[in-house]
Image (tube, rainbow, N blue to C red; front, top):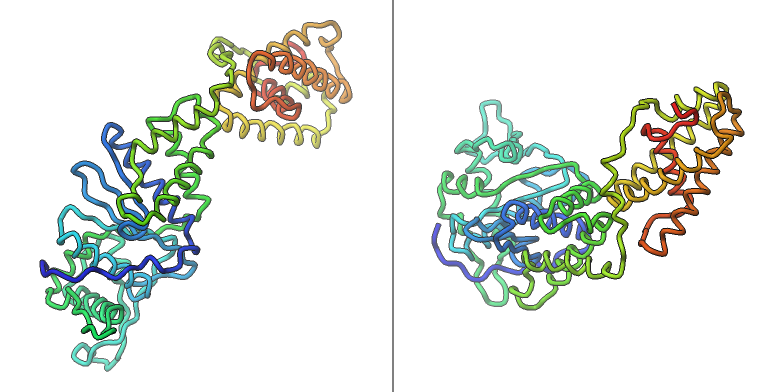
Length: 408
């Protein structure tokens, strides 16, 4: 398996629009994963350098990956699978069949069995001319192919290779490197490929990438709420570099990613973040009732439909909390202080309240909290302080045991 081959053909002219976001997100995920494993090492990723993306760092193997999005099932005999294997063969030859080179086939697709025509010398006793195989399913499951299966797979790739490198422009057709390999040698090559099949779509991979951004060693609390901007910056840089003429210029490294995290923070240098979140852990609660229980304790006839709307607003507030992190915690503490002061005013400690009084009480707390946040805005920078967000914060404080209508 060491015979030298002419330079491989370029496959960069293929369809770059279909699934290109899938490809960018996968490249970002792979780079962030490698940085997370080796934060002190220099890790590198390049799109359209060696196949869809290549990852390399230190003494770790160079990991080359092909990305595919298909609604139909893929089998070993599918054109896209055979094309990828030929591409891996070219890359393997370029790197001198190094053991330090690994391949990955990552597809958003299901696996289908192969129904292949049998060679005359392989016809079974029943006289059937076709047979069903599970070549790709076995490879994806880590099940070693039998000699017969490896031989059939090898034959398929030989035919595909010859179709991609026919005689042209006075040049003789290229001989497949696998032509001289045994079934065992070809099986060893296939085992260098990590086969991954998933039902993830772009949204799923984006969620995975955002979580890796949060876990990145360069991420700290000041980046909270900026995960989307960071991921966009990473994928944009990968895409921009992928169009560079020089192969080396296509590489994105650890230092580039660290620089992006710093650049994002530089955009926020003029902001003054409220440190109130540092005091949140000092708040203690002893009222374990949720909002509905607290409302019904003083207003038994309160509309269930209104309670459902309040619950929906609390659910939205949780998403806002996740998006703004410590900034939202600072908001909660400031709102809590404003609400406690408002509830200490005469007229709120009523044993029985009508539906209208409950709603009026909530509105008064939102008004007091909004005024408090507007006043604090002259000192601190708040990205979330609109009345609707503050209403969600007030309701959350009731639901999370910090406030009560009856001061229980």
